[in-house]
Amino acid sequence: MLSAIVTGITGQDGAYLAQLLLEKNYRVYGTFRRTSSVNFWRVEELGIQNNPNLYLAEYDLTDCTSMIRLIERSEAREIYNLAAQSFVGVSFDQPIATADITGLGALNILEAIRCVNPKIRFYQASTSEMFGKVQAVPQREDTPFWPRSPYGVAKLFAHWATVNYRESYDIFGSSGILFNHESPLRGREFVTRKITDSVAKIHLGQLECLELGNIDAKRDWGFAKEYVAGMHAMLQADEPDTFVLATERTETVRSFVEMAFRAAGYQIEFRGSGEDEHAVDVATGKIVMRINPRFYRPAEVELLIGDPTKARTKLGWEATTTLEDLCRMMVEADIVRNKSGRSF
Ligand code: NDP
Ligand code: GDR
Image: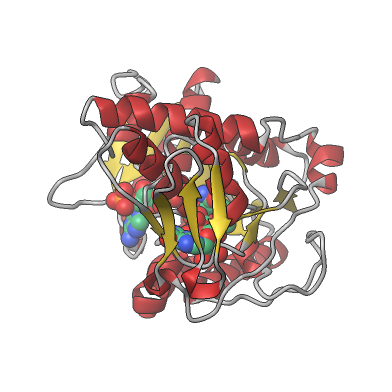
């Protein structure tokens, strides 16, 4: 039986990837960090918490020696490093913790692999945030990087560490430069889920108005469940490499707001501009979205759109879920959750 370690099983991608690997008959060691109230709601929503091939292991990315012990205990053949301080906004307030967890954390695992079993295949969760300030569109594996946040800088370190261990020690380290991917399991602080959760609450009379920052930002949003399949495919390839996973479509946050309200049955209209821009429900005239500069970032990534040609050609990977379907899926899930008073 194949054995894999997935760091960050309490996160969106960790939960979906664990589900996929269990379906493929892997023994999965899913890591979580000790907190006073650990939350496995995603694993529970996917119904995999009692799978006999799922082992939950306590692990903190900043603690290299516990990874050494986990590698020995699990006899893992593959390690997927999905854990991170992954929220760009918070990285401006906690840059050093972000560098330690998101940057050095990956190096800790690479060192553990080098010391214990250099045959292990390693996946690093890299990100389109590394492209940052627009150098070219669409962005590809060879587009120059220019990260715009402590998070992007930390991820770039982890990306190059992966490439460097590939070149220096012949370690099978692959880096997936994934563009934004969302789902009903997305954390509520990220903009898509914040929007779908708020639209659901407005629909149910639990909230008056949604507050956002920069709604001009453009993102290439795909469905997370499809992206974890790409991660797995990268570690089954003949050679380690770097791959972009994206949909090749970009939309503004503003369009996603409109799409989410439409999915709940509302037509909205945007009025005003800059910090005064707001959206009204056409039927009632009520303001349902306004700008709050509190959500602006010190430096912004304005435009992301990825070119996944290499992944399509070499891995046979493709994003198929449309943004409209993804948005509808998220709004519907949030209406059901909020109706029953269960909103994670
Ligand atoms: P989430 O924020 O949902 O999950 C992050 C996971 O990392 C959680 O399980 C979290 O645990 C864990 N974690 C945080 N800090 C530590 C630590 N010090 N030690 C151990 N575990 C820790 O992220 P996603 O699932 O959305 O993303 C997965 C990975 O992919 C991340 O590395 C992210 O940066 C990257 N990525 C994500 C993209 C996206 O659009 N989703 C796009 C490109 C890259 P806890 O639950 O306790 O907080
Ligand atoms: P991002 O995702 O920064 O792209 O990182 P996020 O959803 O946080 O922001 C997307 C864009 O929306 C703008 N925005 C807001 N964002 C949040 N969170 N809250 C708001 O109220 C708001 N208003 C406007 C942001 O400024 C930004 O431009 C995500 C994370 O999953 C990273 O871990 C991952 O690496 C990248 O995607 C690819």
